[in-house]
Every structure is written in C-alpha cells, then in structure tokens.
Length: 100
Image (tube, rainbow, N blue to C red; front, top):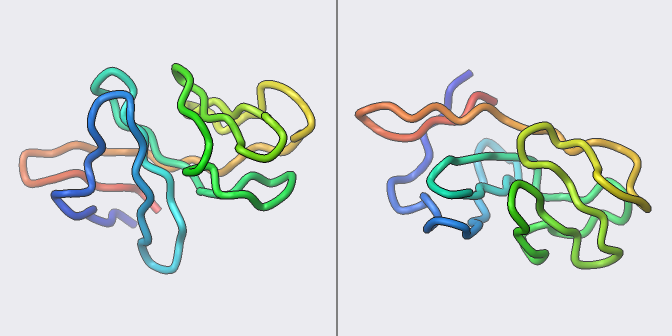
C-alpha cells in the first residue's frame, strides 16, 4: 500500500525527520538527496533512532551505538543483531510516497 507523506516532511540533505503514518513511527532520512525510510526503533533497546546520529548511509542508535544501514535495515555492529524494517520510498511528480 502506498502512502503519501506530507510535502513539508522531506528532510534537508543529510538530515532526518520523524513521521507518523498509519500508526507507524517512521524515520525518514535524506542522504545526499536520496530518501530512505525505516522504523524509528532500535530493536535492541527500543530507542528512537531519530534521536541518534546520521552517519553516511547509517543511523546510529543513541543508547548503545549500534548502527543500521538505511538501505537494508541491517545492523552494522553490536550490540543490536536484528534488522530494522525498511520501506521503499517512491518519488513522483505529485509527491513522495512510502510503500507500507
């Protein structure tokens, strides 16, 4: 199912935004002009990834430093060992959509 995100939700380059769509807490990141979306929760300790740091194509959890690849959701280092769910981002002339 495609869900359009609000026009003002697009983050600036190399920044992140937090969205709430259909009851989901989603992290939207802009890495050099390309958008990525994933659940906004670290599976290790349930921390908000939005409160972490964007480092290239990874977001770092603010609690224990686990990094997750925005492209795949896969953890890049411990202590997390479970992937974060990612969502396809589709940009069209009429707006930006997430495939939920």
